[in-house]
Image (cartoon, rainbow, N blue to C red; front, side, top):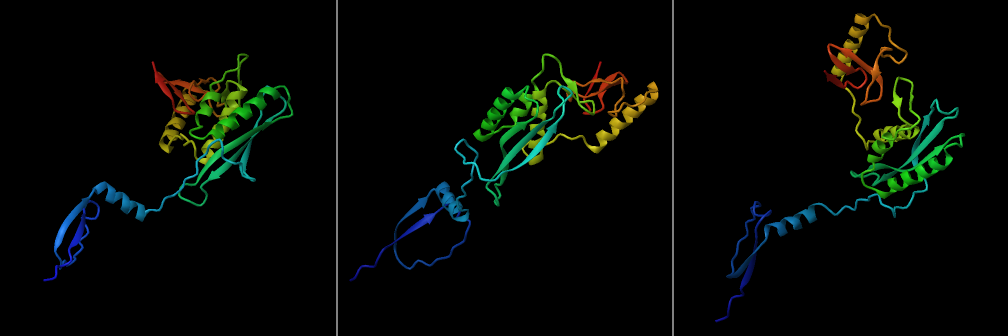
Length: 248
């Protein structure tokens, strides 16, 4: 009597056990095996989503022939000549869901050669940090925390700048907000309305005229936003620029 041919069935459990597959078995089952759930899920994921190579910024990244950038003008009362800060960006993974724009290099030019050496050194160091990759937003806080021992200066709008380096850091921060690396912290419409009401109430109560910067001339300097816009109202020191308030 001839022997029947045996059949081995491989039963898979895991991601496929929810799919009802009806198959008639008309031969004798001689053995079975159960595949691991995690292994089966990995196989399905590999079939469903092809591997995508994401390009990251690093030191060996080759500079493209053409880069897009922006130039920012800095005019300080410390010099008769303005500084022009140019920041060029590189676009990683263009045309994909992982597209990202990052700063690649920085140049600072001016007719004033008084700060030539440290400006060149600063641009080279900042450009090297840009090309290093990772989170480069910390540069803005480090530069903005530099204070000039001879004293800072006020910009138009009542904004105090502790040093020229700090203003360079602010220009870099403005650029990073523009390309989306830093999310801007803007006041809501309700907060702006409350600050406007406080400002009007303060001016009426003290019979004051607003300064050219839009804040009372007697306002103090805010230690948070470095704007001369702090007034004392209802026992609380409130900044009319950023909304920072302290009661005491």
